Image 1 (cartoon, rainbow, N blue to C red):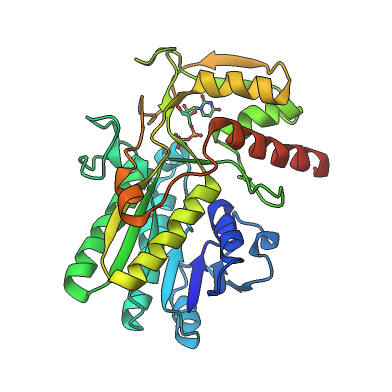
Image 2 (tube, rainbow, N blue to C red; image 1 turned 180 degrees about the vertical axis):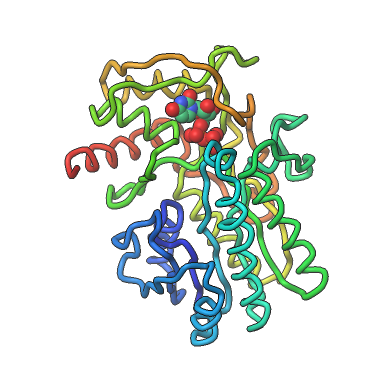
Length: 326
Ligand code: UDP
């Protein structure tokens, strides 16, 4: 079965490609290499294409008989989504619509969508189930919520089948050390702490210690990127078998504070990491923890690499490689 991985050269997409290596799927990649890296494409055929170019997208989809599309390509920086919402609505909404509309025209009706816990905003209930109200608090979350609504409507009207996966905090690196997280600029917690530990960065900043949590720092649910890849594979298999659209949280169902991550990172790297505490970052909810029962029960998924130690050790192995090669 031939599958198109859009955004396959990026962080989560490239780990998905690694997971596909042990399967019989025929994989191709569509990526504009704007934030991804060509090396991440791992010998799979790469179509260098920007989703804003609908004619080009159509041509690629028309020439290849894909049965399903996985869509990892999007802009993901919450802070930037406030200062440049146009970029977010263009990349995450208009470009995704280009892709979906090409798929519709060519009757490719199976889609796996990378959504986010940011669609929940400041949730009323913790852990968060998929039935929690959708109420994003930042433009990034708005763009993902819009596409979730589009998908719901396209399913009703056109029989377009999808699984939308709401990621909590993606982190960690492949265990073989060949690929990992690399954003430019880097804004994510674990790479920033580890870059400070390796000496690539002078100081790490904790955004706020006055939240209503045990130590005052934000709580998040950290989920290893290979567990996310596994959830995608199971979702694809399920979608092709049942032809039933659905939405799942992908999280570990365990929350850790920024301070807890920082403390364990100091232990694992065996380094005293320089840090300061600053004001809160705009758009950061206090606490996000997934209820992951639905995907566990229905898709038989369970996290294998998402204990904090494995997350930090794989991310540290990757950071050591990056700091040596830079
Ligand atoms: N964070 C921090 N310092 C940083 C980057 C992140 O204190 O330099 C905090 C951030 O406020 C949030 C958590 O770490 O509570 C995770 O942030 P990240 O950007 O990694 O992911 P997000 O939760 O925004 O998707």
